[in-house]
Amino acid sequence: MNVTRLAILSVVVNAILIGIVLTLLRKPPPSVLVVETNAPLKIVERQVEVKVKVPEPFDWRKVESPDYREYIANLRSVGCPEQTVRDIIVADVNALFDVRRRTAAEPPTPYEFWKPDALPAFTSHPAELIRERFEQLRKLADEKRLILRELLGIEWIERMDTTFSPLNPREQLLTFLPIEKRLKVEEIEQRFSAMLMRRTSDATGRDQLGNFKRLQAEKRVELENILLPEELVEYDLRLSPAAATLRSKLGSVNVSEAEFREMVGIRRKFDEEFGGPAGIDFKDEGTRARRESAQEKVDAQFLRILGRQRFSDFQRKQDWAYHGAVVAAARSGLPNEAAEGVYEMKQIAEAEVQRVRSEAGIPPEERRRILKDMRTAVEESVLKVLGKEGYDAYQKQPGSSWLRSLNQPGPGGGEGRR
Image 1 (cartoon, rainbow, N blue to C red):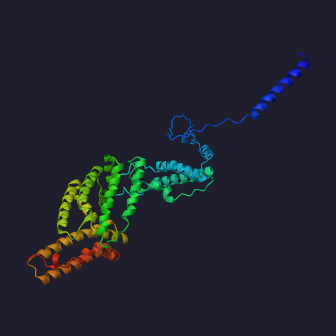
Image 2 (spheres, rainbow, N blue to C red; image 1 turned 135 degrees about the vertical axis):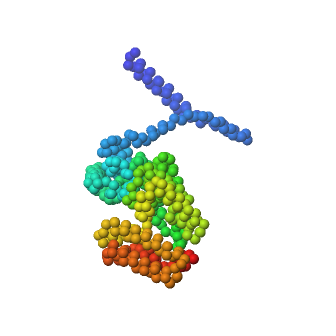
Image 3 (cartoon, one colour; image 1 turned 90 degrees about the vertical axis):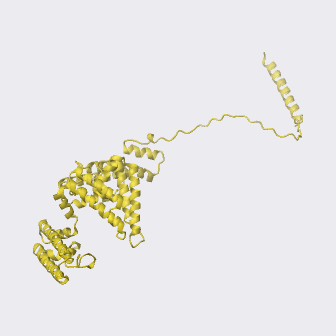
């Protein structure tokens, strides 16, 4: 095929194409058929499968790291605000050092909770050991401050009570508990202690007493919710009001752990029935009589446990007259034997006064004279034992009121039984 024929064929084909285009342009547009009908519209439902891409859930494990620097970098990489980064890291470091502080303050041997000095942390262990534990806690606080400065560029200042909180005497008595429960119990103790210190509106104290009983019951429920029965028994031996009262009254009276456990059980039953010292209703004659009878039974049980000599010492430690004499003797630089001498005078004098008051054959005027002379003689004896300074100090003590009552009429204002 030569060039001429190709050119002619090309011209023909182009002419045909132009003709077709012109024909199509001259044709009218296709008509649209519209059908009017009153038939209801029918909707046909078809299920269409739509594929949605669910974002992958956020996983903290991809952010957390044992290396704090990497951990901080990961937090910042996911857009965590700087203040939140700081809060997360500070909380994490606090938790880490809190465990280390409590481990450092852990007593090498359990506290002997049955002894009078069990509660104060600084009388139960040598001073050298206490100083060593203080130094360990101080070094841990310095280390924590340096770590937070390096990681976050902040100067962390910690309260002293936080730094040395593991040496809290009350918490030291809870070392029989796991650390988690120990912290929960301490939180309960602090919260209810704050509530118990709030005064109520009743000036007579009755509302306060009712509030005390209610809060004690609520506290007990919270403790029962977190402690096992055997843990609750151990808690009662250390921190219950019955244990605290008994421990304070024992003074220098030595008891064994078994004896203390039995005595606390006896005291708790008494307190549950009569509410302890705060539960006395002096206006209710029946309640007072029942309480006195129950107290006599408690004393009889304590006498059985302690024996006569230790029980006598135990009773003496609870007498205000003895406590006042101890304070007065100490101010004069005298030993406890001086206070014991004063207390012995009190017992002898009160027994003799009771005999004189009850003697029917003594005329009233003679009885008053005898009692007055007895008071004068006893006061002179106490003065000789305590000295002038000690005697003046003793007169200011509440426990010295027995001296002034020696020459007073018997109960009810009478002169004694006829």
